[in-house]
Amino acid sequence: MFGKVLIANRGEIALRIIRACHELGVQTVAVYSEADRESLHVRFADEDVCIGEAPPVDSYLNIPRIIAAAEVTGAEAIHPGYGFLSENAEFSEICSHLGLNFIGPTPEQISSMGDKSRARQKMKDKGVRIIPGTDGVITDINEARKLAIEIGFPIMIKASAGGGGKGMRIVEDPDRFLSLISAAQAEAKANFGDGGVYLERCIHNPRHVEIQVFGDAHGRIVHLGERECSIQRRHQKLIEEAPSPALTPELRQEMGEAAILAAKSIDYVGAGTVEFLLDDGHLFYFLEMNTRIQVEHAVTEVTTGFDLVKEQIRVAAGEALAFPVNGSESFQRRGHAIEFRVNAEDPDRDFAPGPGKITTFHPPGGPGIRIDTHVYAGYNVPPYYDSLLAKLIVSGATREEAILRARHSLDQFIIEGIPTTLPLLRRIVDNKAFLDGDIDTGFVARMLSEIDGRIEV
Image (cartoon, rainbow, N blue to C red; front, top):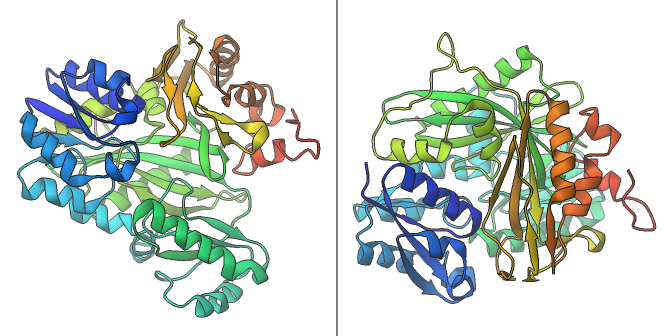
């Protein structure tokens, strides 16, 4: 096991990794920008190093400064968390070259699935259903428009190197294709350093279902079931749950087998997620593979009893997976879990970011309630980073019990001083379609579609 791990991230995921390291008896190093000097991950790490000014390019995306911090503190490994450098093959390769253990997959595995267009082709070759689209990254915009017409509108433009809704546009009108593809390329370049995009046919209002996979260096690859991630705004998730109310045992098995096939195709090591779109005919399509821990990993932890972050660290240290293998030794999933992302955003102003000082912070508690957060009363939410403030994870023996706990927990969750998504989340858990499990990726847009701007419940 490692003696010391540097966490190349911030916020709640940095705290989550610190806790996992301490439970394993591992010392931790926090890195922070000048804007995060008062952040809790700095307070609770064993050591801390300031790596630059507030903009991510000067701090959390600055590879030389992060490497220097690891060398100065004597860290043996680097955990990238999610976002920032977590799926950066160059960063993983530099760590390996310098003798630092990257707690994640190899550079080759990251590259193989990080290029979404290449990943699509790989899955197609393996017999996994993919959404009709272009075979590679677009090099000629005018030619791409012709291809879009052949594929059929509406069309989805997607960043080849990215995720999280960045570099993504839906084109309904062919006359807007050129302007929207330029916008997608610019956004992809700004967020991922790569402006490459590809095209997919747009499947209107599908379900978004993902499978958690895990591999070790001893050749074992398992899946730990699915997560329903359909409730989104601007292609970014708001609520996730496990298990999905849409999957039958047969469909769950089929999707799990496809996810393992994807992971095995690159001999995957570490935590990863294979994402699918599920249409109204219950046909599923490979979307992408994320080669990192997910924001929503907690719902899988709650329903399986496995600590995925500790397992990441153990596997990176060369240990074998502690999970039972799928099949005769398969784990037994317990109950139902739902995660709510509480963001510093104003749903009534098109989810405009709401940085500022939190004057009151009162999280809920009780059986079946977990809070993952890095904020507190008096904390100043900086404007430079992702708006996530906290994750509320509720669980129960059934989905109905989990929703009941969610309703009480959201009512008792108080954050004052800045706008948050709490009012929207409270309305969602009272929505009949949500209660019935009748959800898809267009759910939030429909709720917010009233002309006067009110949320329809």
